[in-house]
Length: 90
Image 1 (cartoon, rainbow, N blue to C red):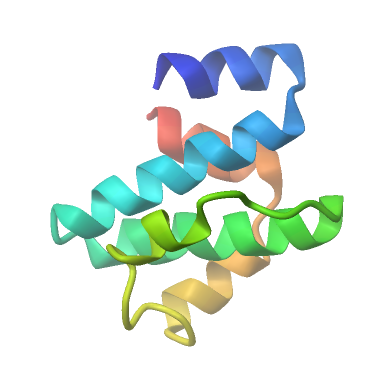
Image 2: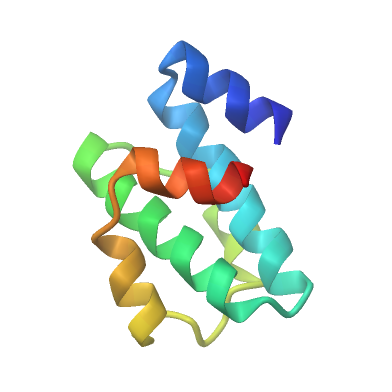
């Protein structure tokens, strides 16, 4: 959480993406499918918008099987960065 907060405060877009990817993976491992889907969907859409490749993607995806295409996932793709960071830090 501290890394995400620091990335947010410094405007480090890619690090925000990696921080949220990590939180999505942890949520998936803990069985919190809704939080995992929301964060992961945002990360995928954010990476597309920023035109960067998320390195180590398969490490995150192991915990996120079956979340793509769900209603929460689709909602996560439409979130703005401020909203998702606020949810993550709450």
